Length: 98
Image (tube, rainbow, N blue to C red):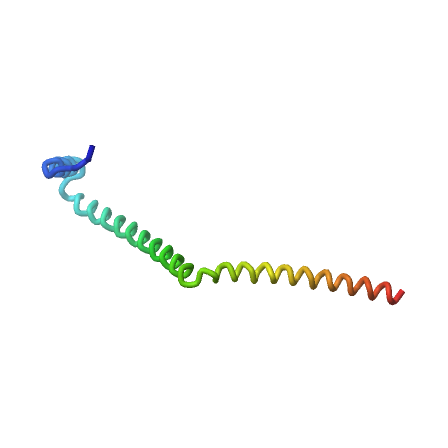
């Protein structure tokens, strides 16, 4: 079942708003509602832009993120080997001087 608000229903809703808020407050409410909708639209556009940028970066160079991850892991392993190498050198220096 499709939900649709027809012209007479919109007029009725407007009439109810007019009775509740009064004619002098409706323009202010409309401005506030428009500002809120604009902020939501801007936030949505920013999110879309960031997502599109991220997708475009991954499509243009899909190996970039993989390469970055591999380089980080190789750097960690290299540091661990240097630490082990330094430890072994110290142990050898101790045993040779004894």
